[in-house]
Length: 360
Ligand code: PMP
Image (cartoon, rainbow, N blue to C red; front, side, top):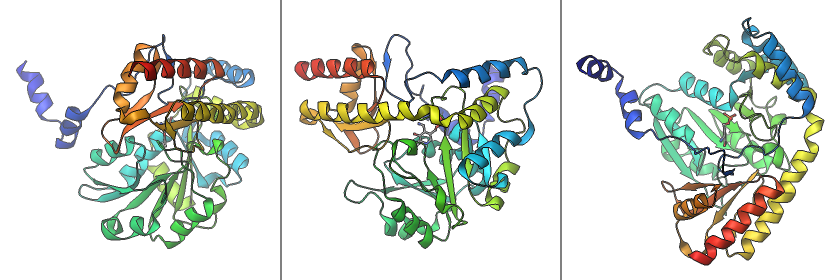
């Protein structure tokens, strides 16, 4: 009606523009094997689950302010001081804070591309210009391109290591070279780093312009609870904490976060399984005629056989109750991305992929 129309017309131009672009996000379907958003396929360890249940008992009270004891636990576990740590509802919340903290309308931000697409939306929300700096398998970290030309004006530079959606891992010495040469903040998203051979946390105390993001959504099987961390210089972390919502995390997230930190050793088998399956599925896909980017994450990016479109494969697999990701809007039209699940899930995926190959 007229009043609704008026209200809708009062949304900011940025919000209205996003409205036209918004999609429903990745599919969920309880009847499908879900390999489209890189979750961990295993439930939380029992000890961690118990702490979640215990936390519900206390939910009539507000959660601890500023995630104090969770941040203390994370700083102990990773070798930092409390003021070098920020905690959030997944690393997505922390990404949002960084964009809000650094970008005014008209500003520019640069991301290594292909990258995590949520970043584009965050930049648009700020009315900022989102610059994508192309990487390739041969040049996964084009340092010069990230620091010169149009990227020179970027307020910060963002990259993920291992990268999503490629799974490519850049040696930490290369990352340090970028951080050293940059005169601005490098946001290093290590969402998948527990599946990789190394990580960059040791660089944080050496470089004030490095901010590392971590999440418990992938390697620690807590995607639904929403736990993420940022590690960086106390003054940068402090400014981000300043603009964070009060009581941003809930009591269950805080409790599960602390419990995971206390039981990190309980995940060794989990990570071993995923890396083993990653190798097995890589070889199986190669045999089916895919080309597979070597992955250090819990997913594989695979170019489908005979130049077909990834989105066609996505639809064909969906018909067989398998959910995977495709990328129609970036330079990966012929690719699919498959999360690594349990052996049983991956067997179902491979059997379905074989059937799709025969039908195409
Ligand atoms: N960074 C990267 C590179 C990701 O792939 C994801 C999840 N897809 C995230 C951050 C966000 O993870 P979360 O908000 O669950 O911590």
